[in-house]
Length: 99
Image (cartoon, rainbow, N blue to C red; front, side, top):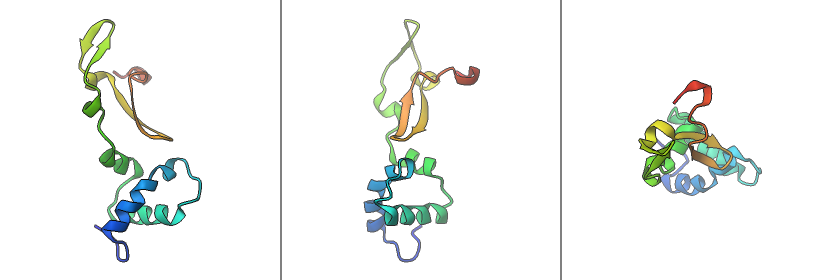
């Protein structure tokens, strides 16, 4: 749902500044404020918005090998939020003993 005074066109234009939430420069504060209002009205977090608007790891990682064996990527790739957006990494596969 769009809050009163914010059009869907404006929302889509503001999405280009979504990275500003993670690495603020304060150059696009009005856009960030509008995005924050849309998120609040829709009871969403920044991470959820990134997950919706970013490609999924499975969309571009087609094959995973671990210890010389082909393995299901979903079991080894972890998605994390970085200052550049969502990142797909195998480096974090065993953080805290998780697989």
